[in-house]
Length: 433
Ligand code: DLL
Image (cartoon, rainbow, N blue to C red; front, side):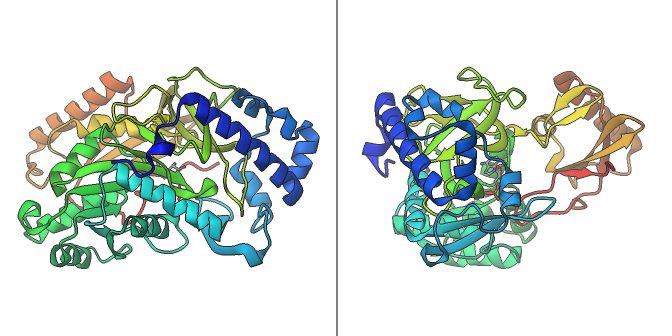
């Protein structure tokens, strides 16, 4: 379903012309309002006339998470506090959180773009939407909330936690759309089943809008089966706005990027240069309309690929494919580069494994080792050693043939891996640096 057909179907030329104009304006705006960018642009000899075509964006320096940290908390803001009406932040695993601010106008754009991705997924003003993202500093709860409100849907701002109560609310209020992380969706399904609910009879869900963490297509199938929904992916990050940067349409062949508000590039993370369209690399995003916090060429660390080919849905906005991991997530195990998502794909293709797993990384001498903890389904015979052995051999074999990697696999009791209410913690890194 189109939300803003004019913007969703611009020609490539129109998109690029608009991006060039907005980028020039933003460069001037940031130069005049953010000392950090004034200094950087002077250093690189950049001003708005440096940009003539979209390729010229490559002249600009990158912005990284470290730049946010170095300017903690408000050093990158372009407006004074009088104009700031909201602050969010994202906590990394180390150091200070990244702080982001929004003007009234930024919030309007944000809800417009979230309304857009929700309508890609088919959400309408007739839906009852259960939002189980945390409401707080995390951009997920509030971000989805105001976008869906703009569509006119009835929102149940359940926030995260207390899964049994969430299920009761979904059942009693007849929620038709569930919004949360994919890992929490699976947890909800598991608890509902334990409570003796038949999701097809007792719940009324039809759409799931899931995002905020990587998830494979295999996981999508599991969620769709377990909850009786059609599951749509959506992507975003706080540094450039939050959710609403991109989302899947009915074709589910990549997520359409709101290119009238963002420029997306894919670079080789080592050289910083553009890769060819369709090749995997690191996603770099430049928001074009942010007032409170203009950012240029933000290095997301997410590994994905782009296509600007027209989509069967009729939209012309470029699409990014499911991120397969993050540059800081990549494991090098005995010389083989692997992302947790590749391990997930293998695990989820094997019957008898419940969709909950964790990867423990340790260091033995100079080598990194990985142990995959896999939860067996309750109906797997735990007391039958031979069957267990065969099952483990099968998982080892599949991992080895698909990834070329010999990893240790350990079966653990059903329900022993911690369930997440937000972003799942898939990797436990025990290495000491
Ligand atoms: O996770 C924003 C968001 C909220 C997106 C709700 C979608 C739905 P941050 O907490 O700043 O913002 O985390 C951003 O999460 O760089 C990716 O690594 C990851 N991520 C977000 N969406 C997806 C997705 C929100 N659909 C970081 N697939 C990003 C894979 C995702 N990874």
